[in-house]
View 1 (cartoon, one colour):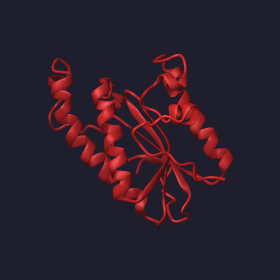
View 2 (cartoon, rainbow, N blue to C red):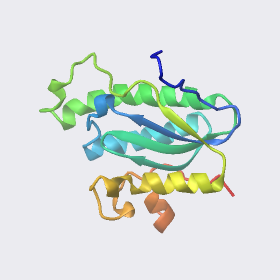
View 3 (cartoon, one colour):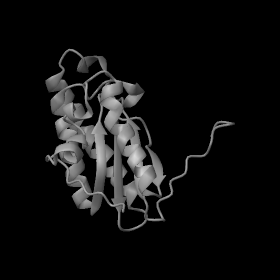
View 4 (cartoon, rainbow, N blue to C red):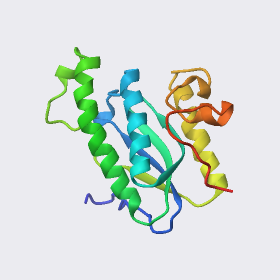
Length: 175
């Protein structure tokens, strides 16, 4: 560990929801192509089902991901994140060659798709969860990708605003 660097801790025993963030390696825009984002959403839904998880919100950006997830048993978050990132890394690296044939050869084959680790934030209240949900829904607007959060297809914003299917079952677990 580097001197002065805070220790990254994951609090997963309290059974609180977690606001998780993870990024593409070197913050590259590896998720620029819509098919890449579509596949990541599909895989997130499958992995949540595999681990009996609930998603209360998400956004897939060109270079990073945010999600609010909850698991009924302690210790599941790390296993879920490891599985989601490992499986998606293999799948998306393969897909990148097809959707971005000019960009993919510039990325060394041994280079990872995702940055190591992920960053969880323990959501202990409805107010804090709503704050994080609004923050992530506004990400595409702040990045200049769309004018309104509901214009970004790879987000739970359309579920909350219009009740639309967003590819992942969304359930608000807070009261």
